[in-house]
Length: 104
Image (cartoon, helix red, strand yellow):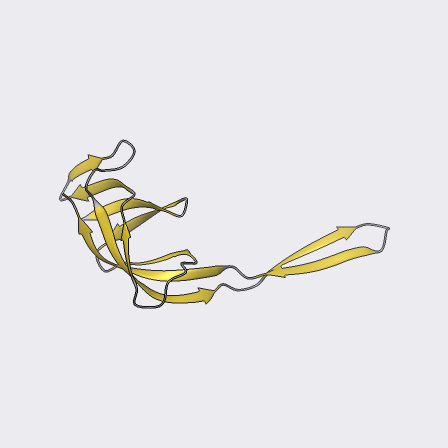
């Protein structure tokens, strides 16, 4: 059984026990999340497709940890003008573990 969910503007495939890496969630580790924006639920070959969401379906997840990705360097450069700028960015992410997929 799996579900396609929409969370923070992005879509993820959620299966029971799977760990999803999503944009940073402002919750402490161990907090429970109920995600009700379920786009599709597939159970043993039978699929329920929502318009846009499946009514009564939700995914229960637990926040595991928040971390920052590796640094991405952006270099701005203009030739013959002695202009160089080096800018770094580290994106914050959160791992969430899917505990259950509930279909009403």
